[in-house]
Image (cartoon, rainbow, N blue to C red; front, side, top):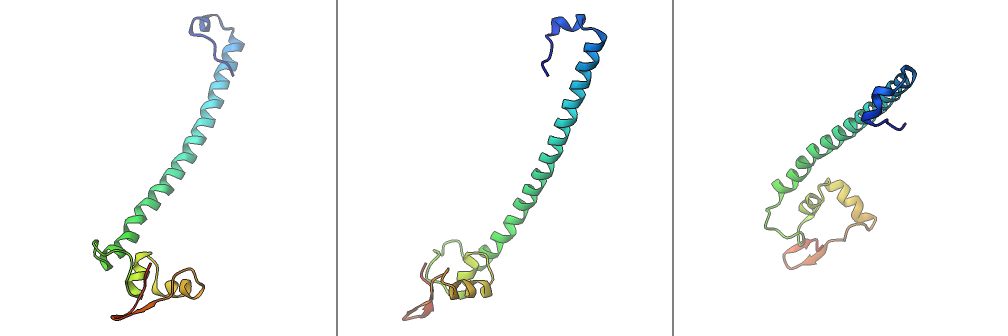
Length: 111
């Protein structure tokens, strides 16, 4: 729908004015539906972001910030990825994570 210029609004017939208003109402309804969908999506993203700090917190509580992500044991290796130790073990068994390597100090993981 093409909007008439401001100067020509005064000369619109009653029928043309009704069509214009009906078209504008239709556009408003469509825009309201789009805004509603965007609000739902926005809230979903906000909820996802709100969950993120909790996932990072588990790692931050387990590992000091200065620790580089290599040469760590099973528990800390799992914490680096914010996953459970059992899931980490499964990933090792299917080859998605490295096998532990032996060192003078015991077994540890090298990333």
